[in-house]
Image 1 (cartoon, rainbow, N blue to C red):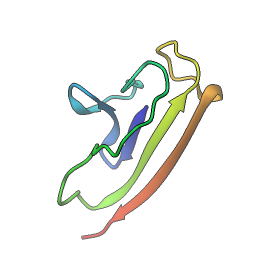
Image 2: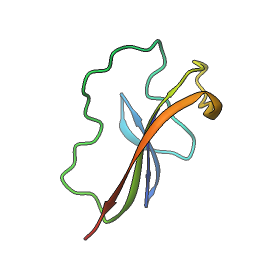
Image 3: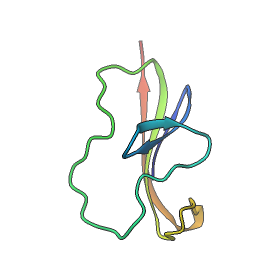
Length: 82
């Protein structure tokens, strides 16, 4: 699961469509764990001013739902100023 809380709403990263605006969780990958090489999920030179929180999570229950009680995640907060 890869998500971004933005001033414009919640976005979820997908392999097929990139960032998708949705209030409902959208899974980026479902399957066994593997060694993940460096992978670009956002390549943009400017973001509109505001506060952004990016989340990367691994849900240990492979059932297609986001199970917060089985989720291991980290986040980074970014503030873009004009």
